[in-house]
Amino acid sequence: MNSQIVLLPLGAWEQHGPHLPFDTDTIIIDSVVARALQDSKVHTNSFVIAPTIAISASDEHAGFSGTLSTGTEALVQSVVAICRSASWAHGVCIVNGHGGNADALVRISSALTYEKIQYSIWSLPSYDGADMHAGHTETSVMLHVAPDTVHTDRIERGTIGDASDLVAQMRTSGVAGVAANGVLGDPTTATKEHGIAVMNLYSSSLATHLARLSTEWRSDSQ
Image (cartoon, rainbow, N blue to C red):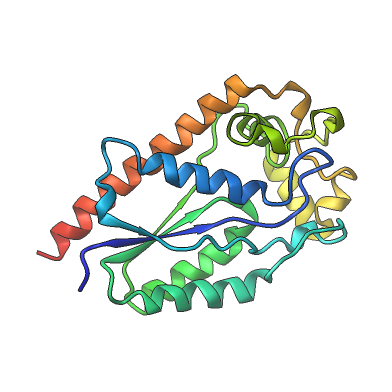
């Protein structure tokens, strides 16, 4: 068995309001992975980066032009099959950059546990003051990592509210039923400086997770 761990990033291709690109989640998660692997805690040679799954479960964004989605079922089947095929590796760390994949990840976890495939799932951590979609948080990060893709002249405030309440509404009406412009949060307050702080939070969290996996999984195999 190869001693390396496969990193499988999950992005998305979906509307992000009038000001951010469809591949926002993919751009962000790819940046997080790249920066985490530069962290001194992580032994880069211990990891193999698989191609990012750039279209995932985005059914909640139906009705917005340009959005593409695998749906939950197809994403579950694809990720489980990929992890199964990585039997040559020490294990697979699924690195999730899209909140809409939550239901799929629960089912993926159940399937991989049943099949006794070594895996771990890491998703972007939240923080006090974070918003959900195309708002202050994501727009700030994009102003830091991909400023040329942000249409600052099109930024407009979206729907603001309790995250759990918004998610509950979206399960019945989708994003379009909650925010006509597709924005959940307030991108008008976004700054590059905040984006730097958020990216540092994300990459440090992932680096710590990868360092722990590398230690624990190698120890378990000895």
